[in-house]
Image 1: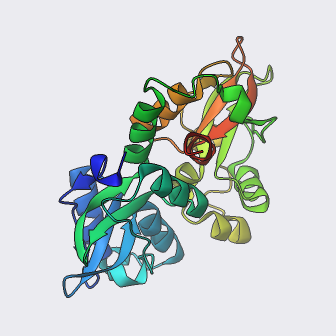
Image 2: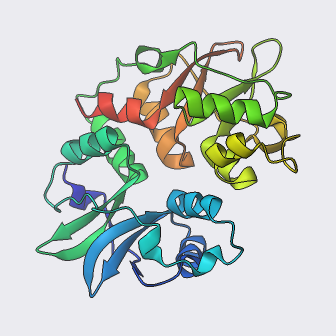
Length: 266
């Protein structure tokens, strides 16, 4: 399967001189998370919703939305050709840990392929007559993941994320049962840049607990499910990680979309 088979043609774009407010408006209105950035008609970068949140968190000025896209976009941007294999592109995305890749031919932007699109394609391929159905979530997951409790201070959870370089923390109760999921996105939405929050210990938000910002109920997968089924959940629900539970709902592992891509693209 080629990347042209799963990409989204006619991708929305934004000019590098446009402001972040316009970019966010396009993303929100179109329900997308990534925008290729152009200058004089040429692709020069890519802007994600995460980039906007990160820039906003570092800017104290209330007029953050006036900041030009060029100050927040990622560059240089990785691109794919329309005839590149889906497996190759998936491997590159997993290695670079990026969420979307513009598809370009002879300097012309043809479309955009997101992690969701790639996972959809990989799942379809895996479910063909010779699938890797023998691989289960338990074979790929990271066992005994870091976790937090609902009553834990958000400051402590943010510190753990920074020090251990993780973007997702399952939230469990006193019986180790999964009750929610805390992502870096949840933290940024609630309190801005996690690093600044930890360093300044903002008084107005220092009393936040994990339960105040976590996503609940958490979408989880049991350890014995086929990996292709879990990959479909990433694509359908646009998730970055899935808590893995046993038959009683107790947390026993975590599976990221990068883990799934690495196996499905072998």
